[in-house]
Length: 461
Image 1 (cartoon, rainbow, N blue to C red):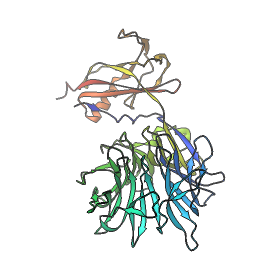
Image 2 (image 1 turned 180 degrees about the vertical axis):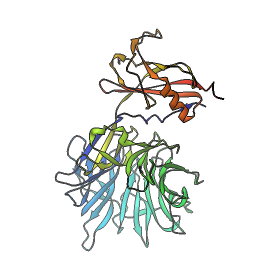
Image 3 (image 1 turned 30 degrees about the vertical axis):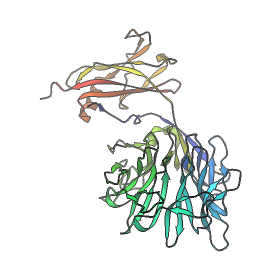
Image 4 (image 1 turned 90 degrees about the horizontal axis):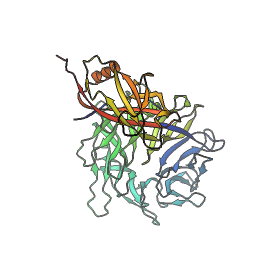
């Protein structure tokens, strides 16, 4: 079996550009909740400091758009699909008390109530076929539902035996997930049976050893993420077993007590937040290791440390790897942000020796780097080259040439063998090991390349 030292995203360098999505002119805080594959972003922002929240369409290059309400004061945009259709919740003009209603927002036009006969409703998600799900109040409970166009009521999905349920996400196959109350009053992550023909069989997705759970996102492959109680009582980000077999994966934290997985894209990248320090509020936007192996990545480590940002939550990730959420901007105010991945080119690397004995006294490990057509190895900043994000290349000797005679120029660098051996020994890796070398060009372009060497421990007794 081949061993990989680190997940491919765990690199000690600036992987994302962070963009402040702003707020209304003269407004207060803002939060981004959803991004589609075209990069359109929706969420909510305060119209004044400590003021009412309004649904908005963010514009990274200019002012944000107030999406309005249904006649009342407040609103929030929860989701935008790839066709730019926006749904959420908006207050209606009701004479006795505020009423929130599921809403389809029409930028520059008249917003549409999706469930006008319900006292309380909210739209949480919309897929690319326009199917919209959320909640509506009926009788003594609030129920997960599908909103039916041009129909004043909603189609409820039931629960797990209790009085309440909530639909959070729908994929393009029409699969719906969220949470539902059981007959014993526990709230559980749920895969809803959306068939209108009874009997309806909703699936309890289980927990991580505790009592409660909640599903937040499902991708087009049917992979479901959210959060669940552990046996210790803390709630952790979770990759759920969609069969209801309770073979769920605890995605862990960043070293603290709790975490939440909030979004999964079609590339199976999972984002949310995790505590960094036990016993304290230390939420950090997180890219989770889907295997549950603990290689979770604090997204704050992938932005310019001089940016002044602290990223608290990652709410949504699109299929291009763009991430939106909320955090503290350089002024200390809560603001919506956008993370845009910096482009990474694929390099060809050849690491020598092909077989490394951990007991050898070899002084250095040699690596030759080739770049794809259109790039010049002479433009590589040697000071940025690292092996597995841990071992920096030596500043000298270096050499430009064509060591393999393939007419493609290459850069030779060396890594201290002692540092490489120490890393491999700490991780206990032997056999075929994939090593990744990464770095930057002088214009900031990133590159990665991986080679496989054999690691032995010949002198070990």
